[in-house]
Length: 630
Image (cartoon, rainbow, N blue to C red; front, top):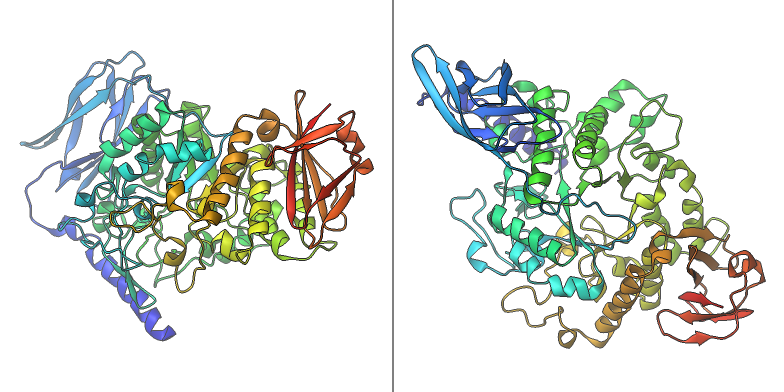
């Protein structure tokens, strides 16, 4: 079986190279059929713009522009004559308007109309911070508002079938927009969508099953939102509607790879557009090689330049045109759609100097934007390596935040282990005690699960008491909390036999659904209890600066009891967790430095008043959230 899988991979790899340069060999009429970025703006801080010009024999022409304030700096030719790269300079006082890119090759001429737009004052690049609560949505699996866009016969994958876990199910952007009331009721302040960019990919054979690219991580045209999700206009409308309600949008970026059906992969500008290997080579996923002072260069090379899968070619960021293409697309996306923050997929697989350049370009243009990447590591120093840190290492990352995979591991372990010196709630305490390595740990994004993981409720054995403890930690500790769709209604499952098991449709989001979990009437009693728990704590958090942005003071756990405080000059909140199987009567002398002259407290989740703080009864497997009072 393994031998056959290897042969299949090699076959796909060879087929890929068989078509890679087919465009340059065909006899067709000279033309410019595509220019990326598709348009640009006047008044950007960076006055330099590089246009990718594409079409049959487009690289055989010399180009010029004639527009006040726009000058041609340099033309670049590459291996494939279907491409030219044009460096333009746009003066600060340039007026918006259209101009013609003129190509000349002897007596032959090519014209292409290009537009420079005026920048709008619409809300954009607000960033997300510790006051926010992010909700992660997989668009294809959340809600279907328009069944007419579920599938198109002219796309590489013309299928849509909810009965097949590996096919597209038809969720779309309008379906997400229709649930803005739901998000606001829950206390959400920001929506993070798995990638919305076009994935015009054919079905691929993975483990004997034909699978679609419904997940969104195999781009085929950077400048188009997938029309099965509603296209560019639907995305713009969602963002405008979200902003009107005070909700932010986080876009999922992928710089490391694209789909094998991407138009510039089917006819590559040059052989070094992607990382090349004599035969198919997968990344090792051994992140340690990147930061290891003793690492062999071979290990670094395989980790960074190996491919994820055969149908996702690994982009070569050392190619300056690749790097510029990706950076400009990131800027274009923020300016055009008005997104507020970036989540970067497979962050640590990107060439390190490139990713710093990309981050800096975004931060220069949009100082308030937040960027947080996915670096799936297992220890704090490794995680800190890929974010602004206080480490004495040669490479200095400029990424403002990151997904906190180490805290995710600690919280899940804490809920599934008995208390010990290094076990149970001790793990959460120990991870947070290492926050000194980060420049600003408040910018880290916390989570209990996501689209690549076993669902949280299943991991904790469907134990509702543990469920509430984990959600309490998520919404009261330092950093920015993120919730995977459906966790608030106890959606469950393991990644067995596939990721599709943790990417089920949200009940009520699709025509014909028996139950509508977007409403209290459609949820079970236990599901409503879960929803109301998240809702109450999330909304309290949103309106309590001390809880989301105050200082964190934690005490070393003892006998299964973990206590910490969030506090500022106006308010103090005490979070006390009893991870044991029996009730405890917590004596509070040990916490005097934070209790100070507080004499009573209000239980945030029950509104019960505790009139004495000398001792506090904490039921078994419970986390109390207490607003201290004098």
